[in-house]
Length: 193
Image (tube, rainbow, N blue to C red):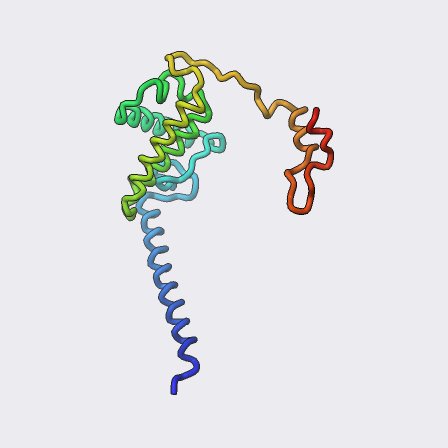
């Protein structure tokens, strides 16, 4: 006759195996961080910023911001030369003046580092990076640059959203989008103004 506790013991064995596997993976991650000199989140290269860690320029403080900007700019130059980018794809004289372009390129840079510098990757991330790169180039030239492809910087014609207090008040006054329980904005007259 089978022991009624056998299913419980099997479940406990399975949990123990999973915990052992997690312990091994955690030890590997800790070893990688100590080898790269990880000193905590947000440190400069070699001081805790693992490959692929997100970078939000407006939240960085000097000297980290300046150090990363030099490294990032070098990467942009290398990629532009390696992939023979034309001024139609990335205007060399003003790409850094477009916040959206800097964001796109920063995302590409961090994902490039993640794809190419992490040793335990399957290799698919390299292919995915190239796919993301092609799509980002299309977005950059189509969406962000406007008339800058002729070699001269042309600021885009647009009004800043963040400085229009009346627009903000109108949108907030209109209320959130309708849900299944509410029919829509409480004051539909606000939408007509």
